[in-house]
Amino acid sequence: MFHYIYPPLSIGLGVALVLMEGLWLKTGNIRFHNMAKFWTKVFALTFAIGVATGIVMEFEFGTNWATYSRFVGDIFGSALAAEGIFAFFLESGFLAILLFGWNKVGPRLHFFATCMVALGAHFSAVWIVVANSWMQTPAGYHLERMVDGKPVILAQDHAVVPADLGSVRAVVDNFWAMVFNPSSIDRLTHVVLGAWMAGAFLVVSISAFYLLRRRHVDFAQASLKVGLAFATVATLLQMFSGDLTAVGVSKNQPVKLAAIEGLYETQPYAPLGLVGWVDPKTEVTHALQVPGLLSFLTYHDAAKPVTGLKDLPPDRFILRHHPDATSDELPVLRRSYWPNVPVVFQTYHLMVAVGSALFGLVAIACFFWWRGWLFRTDWLPTRLLLWACVFSVLGPQIANQAGWFTAEMGRQPWIVYELLKTSQAFSKVVTANQILTSLLLFAGVYLLLFVLFVYLLTRKIQHGPDETDHSHEMPESWKAVLRADDQEART
Image (cartoon, rainbow, N blue to C red):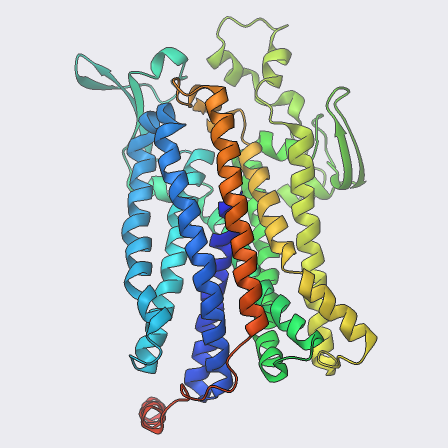
């Protein structure tokens, strides 16, 4: 959770830097240069803490999840290796130019370095989401058992049992099928757009704060326009992405869909819940609902039934894992394959509610911008809107965390969906007390890192952009080269 605060900010800010520096190259206006330079400092801060907290998770695969790493190392390791090659090398190769090359390289090379760092951040998201999506919808693999030192391929429907974990492992047989597994594209789009929103609303938040304090007004107005335009595009695209992701979940993980809507009974005209709660004891959902909307959004047919939890997973799946189960035992066993329904119901609806609120905020802000009211800081409605923009930076973070909870807890009890259980995947020699102790220690360290992050970010905000610094104004020789290039392009 703590690590996931920073990569979305880095990805979103990377795109914002490309936009700002591109505007500087296009116009030669020093305001856009100052804007890009200021936000580069914020980007560097988020990037540094993101890397520091991410390294811990790399080691965790070997320490806490040794059985999982042994079982799927051939698959998961290939995605992590691709991240190192395509993301870390690209970012580290150009990061120094981005941060320290303002006076040392030309504007086009610096802009290229900015683009490469932003692209590297996106590549990191690509391979991490691919690896996680494979855990949600595994594809492009087979199971094999080592017998007398030789691998023997197992049947496709082989049910993994605890006795298999020392000798059976998953092996890639189609790398691109693994990469483009059934959920990877939808989930990658959803995650990247959430990251864009995180970066965009950070720009919006700090710019609105400057306007309310009547500091760096020219900078804040230009920065707010860029941030608001970016936030509008990201928020609109996220609405379509969320719909496609939910449809994918209905096809690939019907148990998760039923859980996030608290749907226990299979029914036509299945309702979509807006707000409420789930009672797991009575298996009843108490919520404000729109009848038929879940069926319509899932199948584009309001009359088509949506399968409820009491019919999921199907009997044939349970009998494959429990061949000796009787008909009376099936309902009890079925419940052991459900996630924590009350929790995923709340996290999913929290994500949707926050996303909808952010959409409403950008819609109102764009209306104010269109009407010429956005910068009237002496007018109460504008001041209220700007204060909402200041606190909007929390919105994408809450939605991203809630969405991540929904995705990860919604697939339980599986660490690899319908293949390997979470209870089978952890390191057997690591005790619960050791896990608790390490979590508490890391919580303390991360608390210190968070305090340091807030302190440094506050200092950068208080200092503000270097608006009076014209040492980086584009030299006439650079402008002449750019004008010649533009003339050649037009010809």
